Amino acid sequence: MGLFDRLRGSDTPRVAFIGIDGLSYRLVADNPETFPTLSAIADDGGGGRIDSIVPAESSACWPSLTTGKNPGETGVYGFQDREVGSYDTYVPMGRDVQSPRVWDRATDAGLDATVMNVPVTFPPQRTVQRMVSGYLSPDLDAAAHPEELRKNLTESDYRLSVNAKLGHKEDKTAFFEHARETLDARAAAFERYVERDDWDLFVGVFTAPDRVNHFLWGDYQDGGTYREELLSFHAALDDHIGTVREALPDDVTLVVGSTHGFRRLRYDVYCNEWLEREGWLSYEDDDHDALADIDDDARAYSLVPGRFYLNVEGREPNGVVPEAEYEETRAELREALESWTGPDGNPVADRVVDRETVFRGDHAAIAPDLVVLPNDGFDLKSGFRPHDSVFDPDGPRTGMHAFDDAALFVDHADATVEDADLLDVAPTLLRLLDVDYGRTDFDGASLV
Image (cartoon, rainbow, N blue to C red; front, side, top):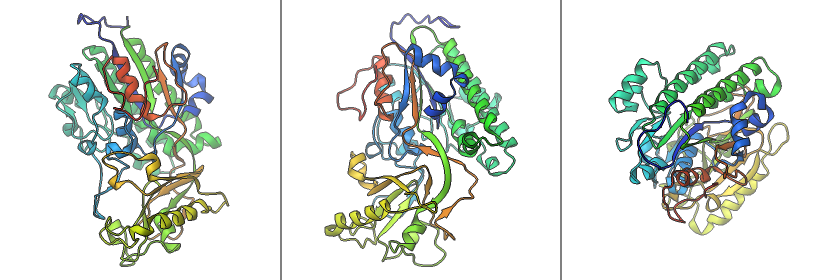
């Protein structure tokens, strides 16, 4: 066994899941010396590249990863979603997730779950053993339950998120130091509660890698100033995972997975600026900065990342596209998106996906009509505010999310990680926990 023997007298299998926001499988594969722990898990069990979901945005990815359901079932499509029958938008939080999480299914089966720092979980649920909700929580006092957890995290300088504003500075030293301190403090908390050994399911998420990769990926890929800092940060991440692995008793299976990968960002792309210039979108006044400002002549609009909506009669309050012309208009927009090129002459879109191809479920009413999966270098923003150009090459971020470069590692001899995606994680965790579920409960399937 690990550092602590399990004395509860139960033969029930247990699982520890370490989630990572934005770990690139390509980064692991290209730098095995930086990732000895993950490389060992891949050798001893299974590991490999997996696909993310559409869209590959963290706020949509975490609900899908933890439920095994596509956004049409979870009801969460991104950091900003549209109200049904309205142009009003909102930021999805934990109570907006419309499908049961893996820890809900575990607790319903009589198991204990500790859940730490999963994005889109605020406010913390009182139905689990202990929880600190993740990104978008207002502060630690409100995010942690029960009081014992809140007290311990407060005293240990635990941080809910990295200060991304520091990454906008040309000198990234303060940003990198803050990211590393956040990583180390979170790892210490994870290790503390892993060693409590009083849970059946442990879920802990590192979000700092996403922040670091957004601002330092260009240095990594281009051999820039902070390349070694990015690698040393990930080496520390792997070391922390190794410490958790060593601490786990023999009856616990460790699973490590990421929501999406990373690739080089060349241009911030303002999709609504492009729609306006192409004659698809118009506004009531020149000082537009929100979806509510579009006028009665607008045929389409966009929300981040790369979600395109037609302004349909009867669906949107001021819809102008007749339902009878929906398919024809969507085909016209799809063709325009597929022929859209950047300043370098390369196509902006790698693929343009219809809503019914990727979104299914009771909560598909707010699904975009088309989603663009961009080619390397084009990071698709909404851009409601007036912009001087559609393409901005001078943004502070140099890394963007990659759909086909997420990673999954399962420390189990029977695991096979191939031809897999994010929706396979939840059923895999429940299979390892020996928790029953129906054949149609998930959009993915167990990899064990």
